[in-house]
Image 1 (cartoon, rainbow, N blue to C red):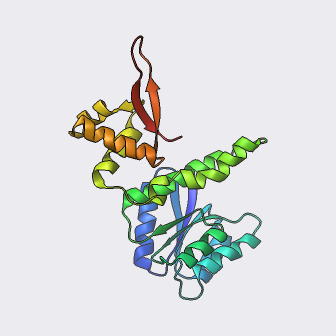
Image 2 (tube, one colour):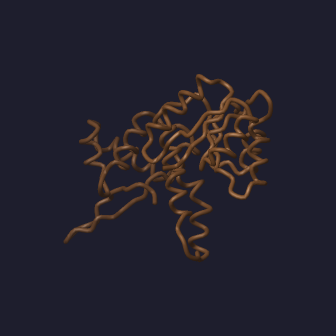
Image 3 (spheres, helix red, strand yellow):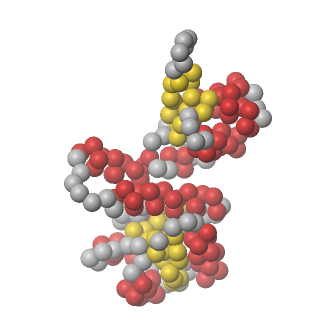
Length: 222
Protein backbone atom coordinates (compact mmCIF):
# COMPACT_ATOMS: atom_id res chain seq x y z
CA UNK A 1 0.00 0.00 0.00
CA UNK A 2 1.17 3.51 -0.82
CA UNK A 3 0.88 5.51 2.40
CA UNK A 4 -0.55 8.92 1.57
CA UNK A 5 -0.74 12.11 3.63
CA UNK A 6 -3.27 14.81 2.64
CA UNK A 7 -2.24 18.41 3.32
CA UNK A 8 -4.90 21.10 2.74
CA UNK A 9 -5.89 24.17 4.73
CA UNK A 10 -9.60 23.34 4.36
CA UNK A 11 -10.45 20.30 6.51
CA UNK A 12 -13.54 19.58 4.41
CA UNK A 13 -11.47 19.41 1.22
CA UNK A 14 -8.87 17.31 3.01
CA UNK A 15 -11.59 14.84 4.04
CA UNK A 16 -12.77 14.59 0.43
CA UNK A 17 -9.24 13.89 -0.79
CA UNK A 18 -8.75 11.30 1.94
CA UNK A 19 -11.96 9.51 0.98
CA UNK A 20 -10.91 9.51 -2.66
CA UNK A 21 -7.50 8.10 -1.81
CA UNK A 22 -9.19 5.19 -0.04
CA UNK A 23 -11.14 4.39 -3.22
CA UNK A 24 -8.00 3.94 -5.36
CA UNK A 25 -6.56 0.41 -5.16
CA UNK A 26 -3.09 0.26 -3.67
CA UNK A 27 -3.38 3.52 -1.69
CA UNK A 28 -4.27 4.33 1.89
CA UNK A 29 -4.62 7.70 3.60
CA UNK A 30 -2.58 7.65 6.79
CA UNK A 31 -3.48 11.16 7.92
CA UNK A 32 -4.52 14.73 7.24
CA UNK A 33 -2.75 18.00 8.00
CA UNK A 34 -4.11 21.52 7.69
CA UNK A 35 -0.93 23.59 8.12
CA UNK A 36 2.70 23.21 7.06
CA UNK A 37 3.69 22.73 10.70
CA UNK A 38 1.20 19.89 11.11
CA UNK A 39 2.41 18.40 7.83
CA UNK A 40 6.03 18.35 9.01
CA UNK A 41 5.05 16.68 12.25
CA UNK A 42 2.90 14.13 10.43
CA UNK A 43 5.67 13.38 7.93
CA UNK A 44 8.09 12.68 10.77
CA UNK A 45 5.64 10.50 12.70
CA UNK A 46 3.79 8.70 9.90
CA UNK A 47 6.55 8.44 7.25
CA UNK A 48 4.18 8.65 4.25
CA UNK A 49 5.25 7.64 0.76
CA UNK A 50 3.24 10.39 -0.94
CA UNK A 51 1.97 13.86 -0.10
CA UNK A 52 -1.13 15.37 -1.68
CA UNK A 53 -0.15 18.97 -1.02
CA UNK A 54 -2.01 22.26 -1.41
CA UNK A 55 -0.05 25.41 -2.27
CA UNK A 56 -2.11 27.71 -0.05
CA UNK A 57 -1.44 26.92 3.62
CA UNK A 58 -2.01 29.38 6.47
CA UNK A 59 1.52 29.36 7.87
CA UNK A 60 3.73 28.64 4.84
CA UNK A 61 3.54 28.07 1.12
CA UNK A 62 3.19 24.48 0.03
CA UNK A 63 5.98 25.13 -2.45
CA UNK A 64 8.28 26.12 0.40
CA UNK A 65 7.31 22.98 2.30
CA UNK A 66 7.97 20.87 -0.79
CA UNK A 67 11.46 22.30 -1.26
CA UNK A 68 12.34 21.81 2.40
CA UNK A 69 11.68 18.08 2.14
CA UNK A 70 14.90 17.66 0.16
CA UNK A 71 16.88 17.87 3.39
CA UNK A 72 15.33 14.59 4.58
CA UNK A 73 17.11 11.27 4.10
CA UNK A 74 14.03 9.70 2.50
CA UNK A 75 11.55 12.45 1.59
CA UNK A 76 8.04 11.52 0.45
CA UNK A 77 7.00 12.09 -3.14
CA UNK A 78 4.53 14.86 -3.77
CA UNK A 79 1.56 15.67 -6.00
CA UNK A 80 0.46 19.31 -5.81
CA UNK A 81 -3.33 19.72 -5.60
CA UNK A 82 -4.23 23.38 -5.75
CA UNK A 83 -6.28 26.17 -7.30
CA UNK A 84 -3.09 28.07 -8.16
CA UNK A 85 -2.82 28.39 -11.95
CA UNK A 86 -0.04 30.94 -12.44
CA UNK A 87 2.92 29.61 -14.37
CA UNK A 88 5.48 30.77 -11.82
CA UNK A 89 3.89 28.53 -9.19
CA UNK A 90 3.79 25.66 -11.68
CA UNK A 91 7.49 26.17 -12.51
CA UNK A 92 8.34 26.35 -8.81
CA UNK A 93 6.52 23.07 -8.21
CA UNK A 94 8.44 21.43 -11.04
CA UNK A 95 11.76 22.76 -9.76
CA UNK A 96 10.81 21.57 -6.29
CA UNK A 97 10.41 18.01 -7.53
CA UNK A 98 6.62 17.58 -7.58
CA UNK A 99 5.57 14.45 -9.42
CA UNK A 100 2.50 16.17 -10.82
CA UNK A 101 0.39 19.32 -10.50
CA UNK A 102 -3.37 18.86 -10.35
CA UNK A 103 -5.56 21.97 -10.61
CA UNK A 104 -8.81 22.23 -8.64
CA UNK A 105 -11.60 21.51 -9.30
CA UNK A 106 -11.42 18.00 -10.74
CA UNK A 107 -13.43 14.79 -10.69
CA UNK A 108 -12.62 11.45 -9.13
CA UNK A 109 -11.67 9.86 -12.47
CA UNK A 110 -8.89 12.38 -13.09
CA UNK A 111 -7.75 12.12 -9.47
CA UNK A 112 -7.56 8.33 -9.73
CA UNK A 113 -5.66 8.48 -13.02
CA UNK A 114 -2.95 10.63 -11.46
CA UNK A 115 -2.55 8.29 -8.50
CA UNK A 116 -2.39 5.30 -10.83
CA UNK A 117 0.22 7.05 -12.95
CA UNK A 118 2.27 7.69 -9.83
CA UNK A 119 1.89 4.06 -8.75
CA UNK A 120 3.15 2.86 -12.14
CA UNK A 121 6.17 5.16 -11.94
CA UNK A 122 6.87 4.04 -8.37
CA UNK A 123 6.75 0.37 -9.36
CA UNK A 124 9.17 1.00 -12.20
CA UNK A 125 11.66 2.87 -10.00
CA UNK A 126 11.44 0.25 -7.24
CA UNK A 127 13.13 -2.38 -9.39
CA UNK A 128 16.56 -3.47 -8.16
CA UNK A 129 19.77 -3.78 -10.15
CA UNK A 130 21.51 -1.49 -12.61
CA UNK A 131 20.00 0.50 -15.47
CA UNK A 132 21.32 1.19 -18.93
CA UNK A 133 20.83 4.58 -20.61
CA UNK A 134 17.63 3.47 -22.35
CA UNK A 135 16.09 2.43 -19.03
CA UNK A 136 17.15 5.68 -17.39
CA UNK A 137 15.67 7.71 -20.25
CA UNK A 138 12.40 5.82 -19.87
CA UNK A 139 12.17 6.46 -16.12
CA UNK A 140 12.90 10.16 -16.45
CA UNK A 141 10.41 10.42 -19.28
CA UNK A 142 7.55 8.60 -17.57
CA UNK A 143 6.38 11.69 -15.72
CA UNK A 144 5.82 13.35 -19.10
CA UNK A 145 4.37 10.39 -20.99
CA UNK A 146 2.15 8.72 -18.39
CA UNK A 147 -0.35 11.58 -18.44
CA UNK A 148 -0.15 12.98 -21.98
CA UNK A 149 -3.91 13.48 -22.22
CA UNK A 150 -3.81 15.85 -19.26
CA UNK A 151 -0.63 17.62 -20.34
CA UNK A 152 -1.96 18.22 -23.85
CA UNK A 153 -5.30 19.60 -22.73
CA UNK A 154 -8.78 18.28 -22.07
CA UNK A 155 -10.20 16.06 -24.80
CA UNK A 156 -13.66 16.54 -26.33
CA UNK A 157 -16.16 14.08 -24.78
CA UNK A 158 -16.50 11.81 -27.85
CA UNK A 159 -12.73 11.69 -28.37
CA UNK A 160 -12.25 10.85 -24.71
CA UNK A 161 -14.72 7.96 -25.07
CA UNK A 162 -12.69 6.63 -28.01
CA UNK A 163 -9.49 6.89 -25.96
CA UNK A 164 -11.13 5.04 -23.07
CA UNK A 165 -12.34 2.31 -25.43
CA UNK A 166 -8.81 1.78 -26.73
CA UNK A 167 -7.37 1.72 -23.22
CA UNK A 168 -10.00 -0.75 -22.00
CA UNK A 169 -9.51 -3.14 -24.90
CA UNK A 170 -7.55 -6.28 -24.09
CA UNK A 171 -5.97 -6.22 -27.56
CA UNK A 172 -5.34 -3.68 -30.34
CA UNK A 173 -8.68 -2.40 -31.65
CA UNK A 174 -9.70 -0.98 -35.03
CA UNK A 175 -12.10 1.75 -36.11
CA UNK A 176 -14.94 -0.67 -36.89
CA UNK A 177 -14.85 -2.19 -33.40
CA UNK A 178 -14.66 1.25 -31.78
CA UNK A 179 -17.62 2.43 -33.87
CA UNK A 180 -19.70 -0.59 -32.84
CA UNK A 181 -18.83 -0.13 -29.18
CA UNK A 182 -19.75 3.55 -29.12
CA UNK A 183 -22.56 3.68 -31.67
CA UNK A 184 -20.82 6.06 -34.05
CA UNK A 185 -19.92 5.78 -37.72
CA UNK A 186 -16.68 4.09 -38.75
CA UNK A 187 -15.30 7.24 -40.46
CA UNK A 188 -15.94 9.25 -37.30
CA UNK A 189 -14.22 6.64 -35.16
CA UNK A 190 -11.27 6.57 -37.55
CA UNK A 191 -11.02 10.36 -37.46
CA UNK A 192 -10.83 10.33 -33.66
CA UNK A 193 -8.32 7.48 -33.66
CA UNK A 194 -6.09 9.30 -36.12
CA UNK A 195 -6.20 12.47 -34.01
CA UNK A 196 -5.43 10.56 -30.82
CA UNK A 197 -2.46 8.96 -32.56
CA UNK A 198 -1.30 12.38 -33.76
CA UNK A 199 -1.45 13.66 -30.19
CA UNK A 200 0.65 10.75 -29.01
CA UNK A 201 -2.04 9.22 -26.79
CA UNK A 202 -2.33 5.93 -28.68
CA UNK A 203 -0.12 4.13 -31.18
CA UNK A 204 -0.82 2.42 -34.47
CA UNK A 205 -0.53 -1.36 -34.63
CA UNK A 206 -0.71 -3.10 -38.00
CA UNK A 207 -2.60 -6.41 -38.10
CA UNK A 208 -1.34 -8.62 -40.93
CA UNK A 209 -3.62 -11.27 -42.37
CA UNK A 210 -2.77 -14.07 -44.75
CA UNK A 211 -3.41 -11.86 -47.79
CA UNK A 212 -4.04 -8.24 -48.66
CA UNK A 213 -3.13 -5.02 -46.93
CA UNK A 214 -2.66 -4.89 -43.13
CA UNK A 215 -5.48 -3.57 -40.96
CA UNK A 216 -4.95 -0.46 -38.86
CA UNK A 217 -5.57 -1.15 -35.19
CA UNK A 218 -4.64 0.92 -32.15
CA UNK A 219 -3.43 0.37 -28.61
CA UNK A 220 -2.53 2.66 -25.69
CA UNK A 221 0.83 4.35 -26.00
CA UNK A 222 3.48 2.37 -24.19
